[in-house]
Length: 123
Image (cartoon, rainbow, N blue to C red; front, side):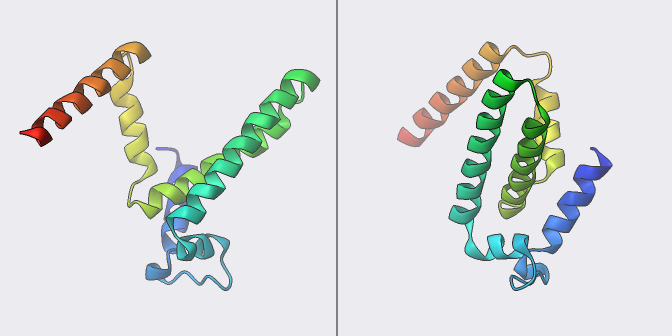
C-alpha cells in the first residue's frame, strides 16, 4: 500500500474519539462524533463536486480541480472506511482480487452470490 495512504489512515484512526481524537480541535474527530450519516453525506457532497469538476474540465481543459476534488473524495472515503473498521489495504486487496476479471463477469458473480445468500436465508 502507498506510504501516503497508510500514514493518512493511521492519522484518521487516531482521530476517532475512542482513540483520543478531540472533536473540539479535529475536523475528522468531529465527523466521527457526528456518526455514519454525517460521514456519508460528506462523501456524497465530495462525489458530486468531483463529478462537477470533471464536467468543467471537459469544457475548459483544466483538470487541476478534478485532482483537488478527487483527493477530497478519497480522504472522506478513508474516514468512512475507518468508521466501519476497514482499511485502505483491504480495498487494495479487493481490487487485486478483481484484477484480470472483466467488470461484467465480476458483477455477474456478485449477483450469483447474492442470490445464493437469499436462498440460504429462505431455508
